[in-house]
Length: 554
Image (cartoon, rainbow, N blue to C red; front, side, top):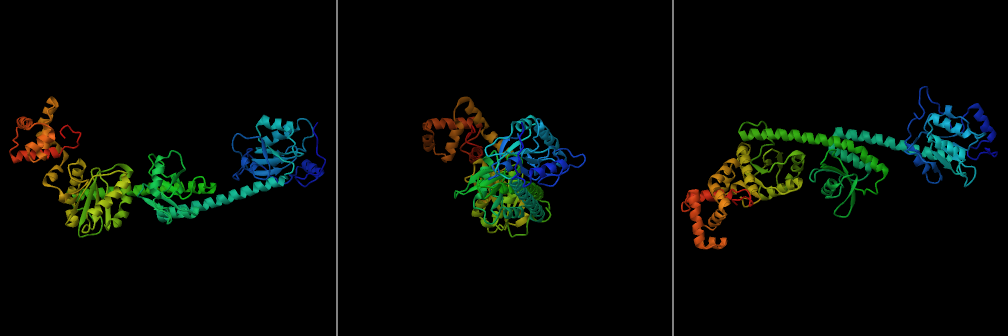
């Protein structure tokens, strides 16, 4: 038997008689009517951004799921009613609160729940009639049969408190949405007004905290108080991470948040925020997520500008090397130009140097630096070159190495007559860089003017040098491979010790007579005479041009 409460409802403040009269006349209790427009399907309701599980979890209400939905369910409204069939007054997405006055006969629960289902209601909240009481079994069965979420509302909680909690959450969500729109507008204005620096400034203001964007450890856009050294740590941690956001720890033990800006792998550009991941609020996360598309779009434009600039500079360099007019100088006129060449690197790493190196120029003692990536040795053109020396070159090369994350061999020289001497200087710097890379030079950074005559010859075209090596040492390499006689090693030791027989024999661990026999064999195999200076020079140059210690002739 279905029982009906006879007391005045504390939840709605209306007498049962008035409520029943309202049901008969079709008036809605507690809230205004929400009617579906013609053609609107159940559940087609406006979104408030409030979800059922969030409302049920509201502190102090004591709501509890009896039948939990399998996925998040949005709530459009909270409405209390005890009409037997309120479907004509619902727009979809409502949490319906009831005390079950419509339960007059068997089957009423099924009919009521079916009506809610037809109207697209989000869930049913049932107010139990006494503390500790359960929801009636027929209501539970009806909701379970059609999959309608069911929430138990404690006896002591008025329905108006549930409605207030919903409206507070909806108002907060609308406030967040309005703020998000303002953030979008500010970021869009920043892109058109100041590019990446302005984007970072606006984002820092929105978060009221320090942020930085690092496209590699040297190319950094940061808010004024960003932690020192944060860019390098951000890039290192970001390059190791698989999922984001991820936490990084700075040298002073400060924990910061790292998010990926690059959309393609391997990622090089990361966003840092001076706040631990665990301490971030949902609002802060939304602000960061909201900014990422703008940062990514601007990053694409920055890299496109780099690519165009690099292409223009490569064209100017090619014209300069050919001796033809290259149009306007790469920078303003200067009394001298210094050229630093280093091995070429492919892809965005090379282009990133366009942003990384020039800001370091003044710190290194050069007024201006032009970076020209190339498929051969890349080139740095320093102006003015009058004050450029070894320290300036070493400083700039360290900047390049930090960006490439490895050591490089390089060569440099001064273009003494300025722009007009640029073709010769570029060629000389590149030859010095190639010589330094072979290990034939004495230093990792070789200055062309300090190379010995034989080193300048070794810096010629690789094909020419390689042909010379094969011509002079080829017969000895072949003889050693067949007989294991170590003639190449003997020749190298003999020449390095200036032709001293006893010292050479001791270094090789052989008798002097054995050394003499090997030297005679060398002359017979090669057809050259070790007593002639010209043949000695040929042997010396060929030995110094070997590319690595692993080479059989080394």
